[in-house]
Structures are given as C-alpha cells and as structure tokens.
Amino acid sequence: MNGRTFLDSKQSKQRTVNVGRATTVSRTVSRRSPKVDRSLPKSTRPQTVWLDPVAQDRLLRQQSLTDAKQGHYLEAIAGLTILIDRNPENATDYNNRGLVHFQCGHLDAAIEDYNNAIRLNPKLASAYNNRANYYASQGLLIEAIIDYDQAIDLDPTNIRAWLNQGITFRDLELYSQAIENFEQGLQISQLLSSPLNDHSVLEAHLYGARGRAHHLAGDWNFAIADYNRSLERIPESDISEKRLRMQVSRWMQELTN
Picture 1 (cartoon, rainbow, N blue to C red):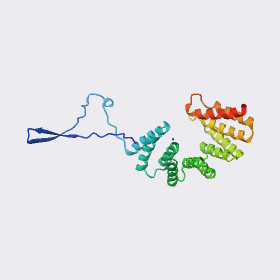
Picture 2: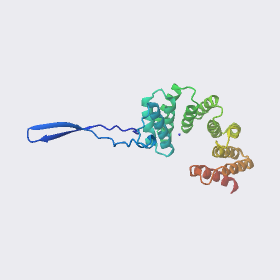
Picture 3: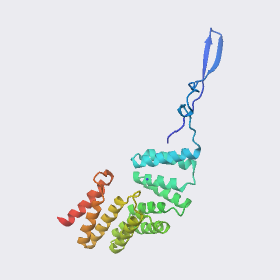
Picture 4: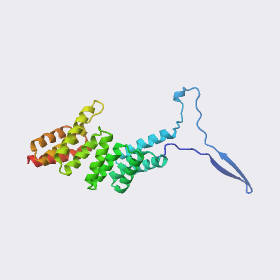
C-alpha cells in the first residue's frame, strides 16, 4: 500500500517587566487551562488523550499507508522513514516504504528497502513479490520468477504473486504455464471470496491476463470469453481500474476489428 506530529506540548512563557529605569522584575506567566465545571458529567468534560509509543506508531503507519493510497508519496515516505528510525528491525515498514519508492520511480531505494525487509524477515512473502515486481520491471525475468516462487511457497494464497508470475511467464512466451498460474489464482480467489472479501476486481485482472495469454497463443475464442469476463467484473464507477478496462477493451478490439 507518509512525518506528522500528533501531540503538541504547551510550555510556560517567561516575561520580563521593567519598573522604572533601574529595577527589573522577572516573573513566569503560565497559560491556565479553562476551569472545568465539576457539576458536569465526566463524559462531557474536556479530556486529554495521551498515546503510548506503540499507539503513536500505529497511527503514523495508518496515516502513511493512507497517504500512499491517495498518491501523496513523499508524505508516505516521510512517515515510514520515521517509523523505521524508531523501529529499525521492522521488516514490514521497510517493505511498505520500498513499495512507495517503487511507485515513485525511486528504483534504487526500492530494491534496497526490499532487500532489508527480506534480510530482517526471510519469511515475508509480500517482500519477495514486491522485489520480483522490481526485477520484472528491469527485464530480469528469471530473477522475478524465482522470487515469485518464493512468495508463493511462503503464502500459497497470495493471488497477486500467482498473477504477477503468470504475466512474467507470458512475457517469456510460456503461455501454458502462464495460463496455469491464472487458473490457480482464480481458484484461490473463488475459495476465499465472501461477502466481506470481494475479489471481483482481482478476478478481472486474472481473466484479462489469461485472455491475453490465450490471445497470444492463438486461442481467440477463449481470449474473447475471458476479456468479457474481465470487463463484467470491473465496476463502471471504479475510476482506479479505468486503465485495466481500457487495456482489456483494446485487446478485445484487436480480435474483433
């Protein structure tokens, strides 16, 4: 899937008052809190909430991930950097910052963060998937395949790793293996789907990717069927998936025109 200060401290101010020419009187003036009406129920009185360090980190992490989702990448990186400075052994924060760096095009910083995440937690499946995406973007397809394998071994339900590895197989023109990956991802998605966990958009990606593999392999009827399944699963109101809809529609036009 960003620093902020959550708590402000109020300090007393010192003021110097001159009396005549030779006499100086120094006194401390404090801001007084407004009087609390003791007759009011406790629930209606002003209250100060103090957060422990763990709660502060949790809030900063949530805000950083929200910033990243909204495209505020520099704010997200700043927040995650604060978290890493506080908790240098947290592999997840390195992985998240690496992903934001990757989205910004800071590729050297991204791979460094992914490597640190894997060093700290060799069983963090998402870090292998993210590093594989970096390798694929650099044309290092075999290295990407190896990392996707590791991600899937650690978490066989990682649908995105199945999808991404399938796309990499397709780029290598290994269409049968690519289609097997997409079908595995679809089976997992259907097993995990529930009213609280809608995988329709992820399935749209899988059907679109499988359709493209059929298309390139020359199985045009299968390709058209998958393209239609993909488009059916992309909500018209989902602006974030506009790119996928346009891409699948363009592939469809290549076959129907």
